[in-house]
Length: 227
Image (cartoon, rainbow, N blue to C red):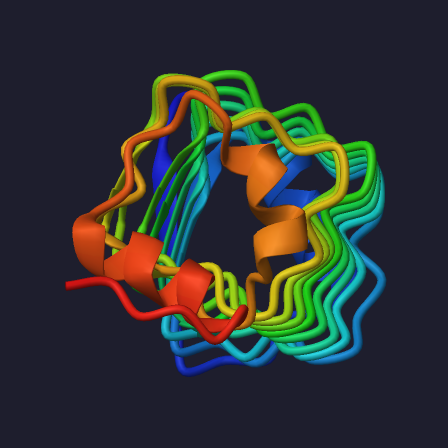
């Protein structure tokens, strides 16, 4: 890209963005309103979106590798099949947003709300997640192997078949999460809220590290007390 254009407090159309692309330029969009627009298949690699309105915006199959989305309001947006490799998503609201079949390799997701978001079939090698609200999110078969998860709330999330081997949980929640076929061997769960997990589900945590308090809670469901 030869130059970077800055658009602030505007509502650019798809054709406006295409003109920037034709010129071979990149863009920084600040406080722009792109709500409900169809931006599918555009190559927005390296673009920055700061404080933008992206609710219900479609980035279907768009290229957003190395892009930055900071403090955006993107509830109900679609990133289906999009390439977000090495992108940064920080702050903002991405509730009920679809990342189905998206590429999120080496993507950083920080301090944002993703309640009800769908990551089915997303590619997530090396993804980093910290300070993220993933209540009721759908994340089947995602790999968090050897990851350090800090302040991630998976309450009521669909985590079936996820790989948490050797992961470390720090101030996280797995309360009432859907956990069938998950793997936790070597995981350190002492910093996770395991509320709602029954002893019948505890076999999932074979090989994991839990605290005496957590063990007592699991046994408490059988009416036993641990001293």
